[in-house]
Image (cartoon, rainbow, N blue to C red; front, side):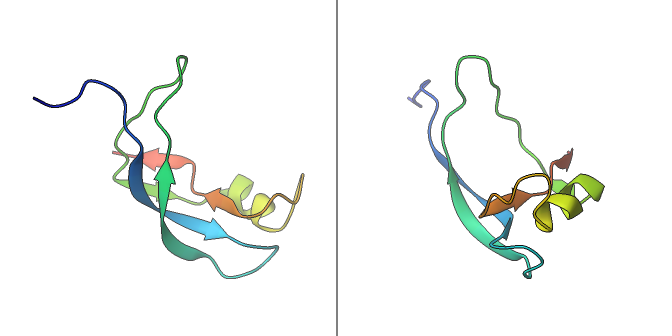
Length: 73
């Protein structure tokens, strides 16, 4: 019988390691959703202007950064 408890999953992500650096697609671990969150399956994601500004360090230079919040699927 499958566990009903949320599990940590592995998925691919486009990661920016520093301002203007090339993106790398890597496998990452994602923790189970918290009480006010849900997990959905994303088939594709695109980059938008918000991702581009984050890629260049605005508004806060936080790295590594996972880009692609425009989900499809």
